[in-house]
Image (cartoon, rainbow, N blue to C red; front, side):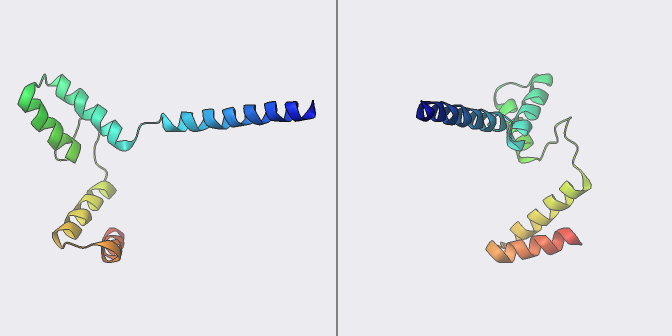
Length: 105
């Protein structure tokens, strides 16, 4: 009887933990948020076909700012440093070190 009660309790604990994880997984990622924002803006502009594809591509890359998302100064700095690191073709630890120093000052 105690074994059955322990098994049932373990089952409920496992289900509860799974439910908590499922709730965390439902939170949209930043990319999903950007997709939603860009898609809304494309719809508001009534874009269709190739024009919509071109707009969505540039919007998702961050080239076209969606109405809802205004870049903060930190985001602008990150974008600038990231571009500079890419231009210098930095990789791995060298890139991390550069990005750290670039973002600090």
